[in-house]
Image 1 (cartoon, rainbow, N blue to C red):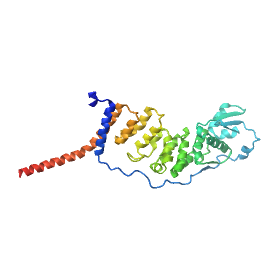
Image 2 (cartoon, rainbow, N blue to C red; image 1 turned 90 degrees about the vertical axis):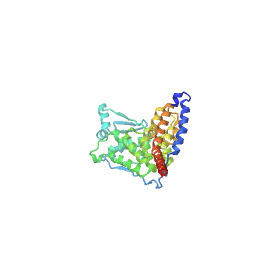
Image 3 (tube, rainbow, N blue to C red; image 1 turned 180 degrees about the vertical axis):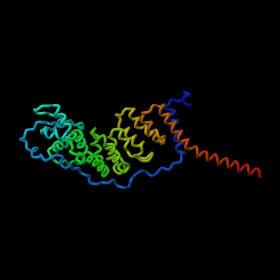
Image 4 (cartoon, rainbow, N blue to C red; image 1 turned 180 degrees about the horizontal axis):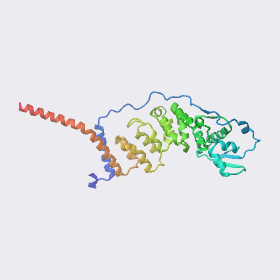
Length: 341
């Protein structure tokens, strides 16, 4: 209606809406619970290591004898070279067997195994080297910081296990989840490493749910929120355990912080992140003012948001006003009765 008068522009109407919303919001009875802070300390248990007994027969002496001819040169992440025998590689890895068969050459073969995680290249090189040596019968052992690289290497190599019991991928996956649940800091390390590898996409969401919990955020705010959550891609916001509305760990508070820290995001991406907060129609006046301050919504969109918020508050106020009307009617009936007397 105000827009039809052509007296105010959209920004001025938003200001009027803001004042109106502040007034009606203040009249709404509320019982805000105590902030969701967990007094219980996060578990701080020693991380579980991962070991794998030799997968193949013991030929370690052949591996260590450098005088023996090696007919496959493997370049790992363009930074490390290891020479091995095609006999051991072909019988142990479907990926390497496919490359060797395709080359169909009796001469020296060069195979490149790239690393897509530039920030984890050293770990990847070490883990891939150990994985290749395991084809000669060497046992495997990984620390939590190596889990993501080990999971990736096992998938890339497509190791030929003798039986399902020998397949260590499920055990390694479970060990990643167990360690993430046992200790917050270890879980954060595993999650950050998993984010570097596409091969870990089937496990990182579960790890995020175990790590980005209300308890962990409460007890380790800087580590979990500042150093981890704010550095993750936007889609990981879906796996956060949020706190109560209007609190420090609410959907609005954490998503607003994320948008403010990621100025490189497009307007569309920022709107998509904040849509989750707008849909529930329970923003406080302070929150809706912050949302407006982001300048990611068109004035017409902000008017619609204000309209919906006001409608929600007024609808909730209807029962209370109805009770007041009933009381007034009762008073009128009493007055009529007294007049009859």
